[in-house]
Length: 338
Image 1: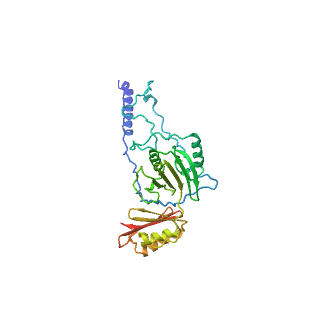
Image 2 (image 1 turned 45 degrees about the vertical axis):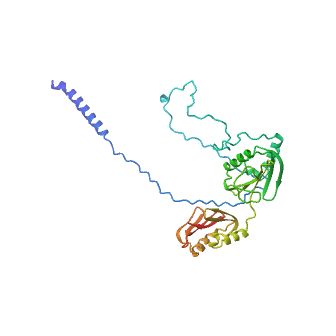
Image 3 (image 1 turned 90 degrees about the horizontal axis):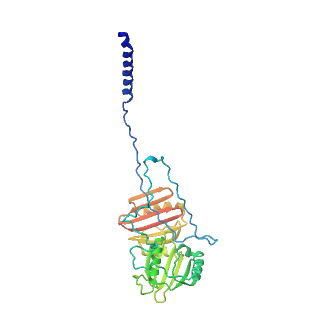
């Protein structure tokens, strides 16, 4: 009988050994979580240095925008087909909160319900003439107007002008909003025909002016009585060293050392800060920082030179703040009160 149980004992011993080995292999190893190190991001400085003069090619083509492609979606793992719901043969019902498309033109702001959503009709012959002048002049930088009748076209060295008839006040408001949406949103303002600043009054003749980031200027002259509007587009060329001298005499720019490394291009004011912008600037202009320090602008200084950008911002004992930025042949200096 003992001999008969030997196979059974050997079998039980083998099973116990297998079970022990299984327990040993099921032991868990410690879970080591990878640590993601996020570097501290360095501060950046805005370099809105924009020469006021734009550029155009000699062959008459002034629109050099390049298109951008649509990136392909990143391919992930295949989805579990068995878990996908069976598509319904009936179309989805619209959400009760979903607002239907009312085909409102994108150049009409939602908060301007009083604007005429329907553009004034343009005769096909007028439209063809307008498009021809528009696409072969400085006007090409502006959104094309879809109202009025062509009257005349004029041009000079720095600006092109088109005059239209039968323009309503609402069409003018609409176009001004469209200009803003297309980037002409800097240094905006209304004035009378003599250039004196005024509050907008749709019953009186007015002039509207604005710039974009590239220094291109648009100007609208509108007469509500005749319903004529002249649109001009171009760049300023009358800002020379004489204006720089005037700014040094009449503004806080005079508190800064003279900048002699480039050609004066334009000026602007933001709050108490007055800025002068220079083009064709020599890279050696970084020495201007030494001049600022010698002039007493040494307090709370922020100085740097990174990725082709040189900057220096500091204050003096009188509470004046200076700013100097250089990049790619252009420079901006500024002075104001903190």
